Image (tube, rainbow, N blue to C red; front, side):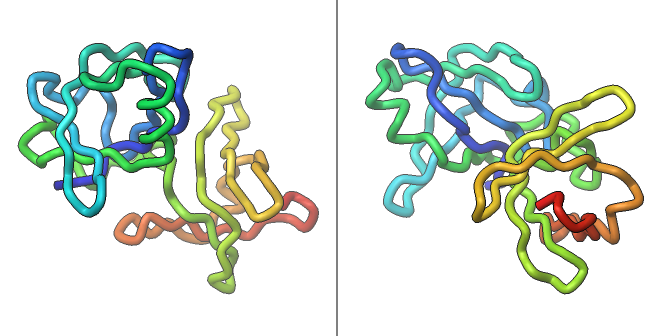
Length: 164
């Protein structure tokens, strides 16, 4: 099984979820195949009833998640699929959408925070990073990037003082 998304939050009171996809685009999923959420170490299957793109995230309805209480139980959970459940998956494809869930570290290897989202501002794409001091927005500028480690989903950056 491979990790494809994270459930970011609930949306409304009828069990709808906001998911941030990682590594693949939502439209690469085979909707007739289940997705899995780990409960007590056991992958539990859910079927996607509907998916609606909303900016960089996707609104999703899953079977058996019908109210706010059920939705809140899965918020923050990673979402997995069997590798056969994706179409045209390319492991080495990297885009802004794929960075959610990656760790940002400084040039000395110290963790800065986890990327939760991005905003594709024309000419100035930005990352939202969850840090110990709260969520921060930083520009994703090539001059700040030292290296990209796809195997360990880590972005090494040299950020100007005061940004974080």
